[in-house]
Length: 156
Image (cartoon, rainbow, N blue to C red; front, side, top):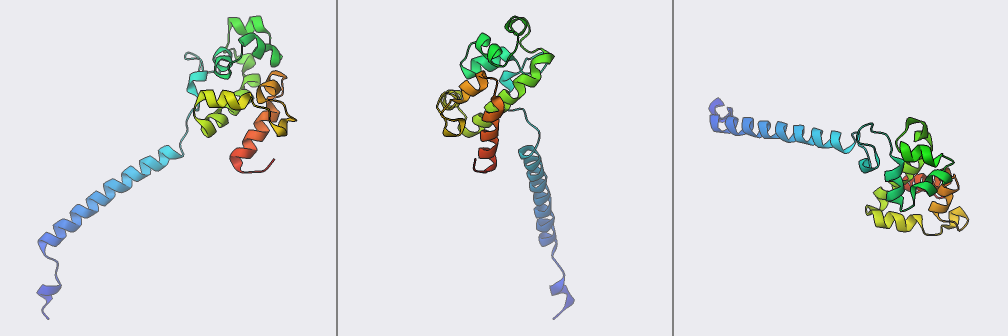
């Protein structure tokens, strides 16, 4: 056997180089996709104020299908203040658990009307109350606990 048979031919080398180039491009695209899949995102960005980026109580109320006044009173917030500034910094701590519950529900159900149906359906883990009733009784933490457990696969 001669050494000439063992040496790669130029055509094979060109094909190998081309395949390596394609493989590198595919790997780069895969890395971009994987970074995007686990990357940062804002769920339900439509519930935020366009200027400040904070959660907007009016948009939250509309999404839930409840009047702003009822949401404000249910979360022990001043309705007049919220009506004037629905994305005020001071009300964000009260709105955050409600928004988080809606985020989880939107991931489960996708459609806002299905989210609202779930919110208005009595739940055994809420002693037969609806999630909306619990939120409007200033107890969004109970709803959030159930949803976070469900999302994590933990039985209640």
